[in-house]
Amino acid sequence: MPLSRLATHRHTAFVIVERVSIARIGVLTGGGDAPGLNAVIRAVVKAAYNSGIEVLGLEDSFDGLIEPDRSRILTPRDVTGILRLGGTILGTTNRGNPFAYPVETSEGTRDYSDRVVEMFRKMGLDALVVIGGDGTLAIAHQFYKRGIPVVGVPKTIDNDIVGTTNCFGFDTAVAFATDAIDRLHTTAEAHRRILVVEVMGRYAGWIALYSGVAGGADAILIPEIPFDPVIVAERLRERDKWGARFSIVVVAEGAFPKGGKLALLEEAHDGFVERLGGVGAKICERLAKLTGKETRSVVLGHLQRGGAPTSFDRVLATRFGGKAVELVKRREFGTMVAFAPPDIIARPLEEVVGKTKTVPPDSDLLVTAKALGVTFGD
Ligand code: F6P
Image (cartoon, rainbow, N blue to C red):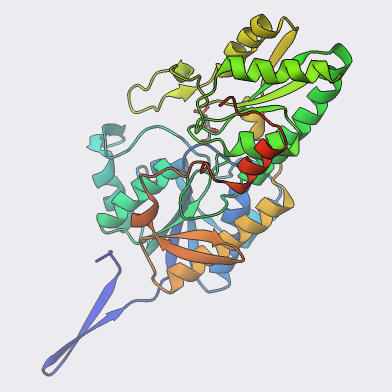
């Protein structure tokens, strides 16, 4: 059973266990940032405040539960004006799993997870709202099993968390990538070139698929469908035949050629996950040889994570934050808020962690794109 302050009263033959009401909760943001994190924090703080609950903002993910001076009380005054801001006022880190290694603290080297549980008690917290991606939510789930009452909020531009149709941040990333593709269209057309755009997404092709379709790409390469560069080149050459002598190729950072490997910028090491990147430049070079055309590539990188969230992401993030406080008040711990259109619901963390939501082969958007002549290199 999760830690919650229990009061016991002895009445003759009975022991009545009465749960003390939620008075103080912690909120933290973990993993890579995504537009909308501040909108969630704002919603949590305002909804909690209006229910008489104090919110402690924990800095830099679970680090805020290691050192006493890495947290601060958040009131509505502290979150006024942050709805539209990218990043996170609490800071974040995507350093590896705190259960996997000990860390240096002001009191010497300690097991990170023990320290977190201990600090949670010392800080007088009744619950924890954890805003994060698959890695952070998996850590939150482990802490829930260690007795911390947790509610998770799914965040990632990659949109790869199972159990929720959308994560906030995804719409903003797609909007940015679409705008970039629009800009590349005009220069590609002017020079009759092939322009390759590499987008993020880790092992899922959601950003590539959505921005590729929205931007009218001619080829979309995603991790779910290993591609053949020869097939891609053939399709692009066909465009020359009917007079469209330029092409746009959108490639997800996790896409790889048939029989080939993922392109990595850095191998996993010391609690850090592997860093994907470089496939765009590789396919660009290959397409230049296969088509004989001038090709250029561009990597959108962290631009996709920065800037103001779209109105869709602001609304989704606000709904997630409000629902998280509702779940805390109802003591529905070990859960994650999720978007199941048109509703925001709760799902057990147990069902969502350790999995990746990838683009299904029968996705209607994928099927429609193929029907329109977009090649996926298969
Ligand atoms: O998960 C979000 C994401 O932006 C991925 O799309 C990308 O692979 C990764 O984070 C990059 O993380 P960072 O550069 O912050 O380590």
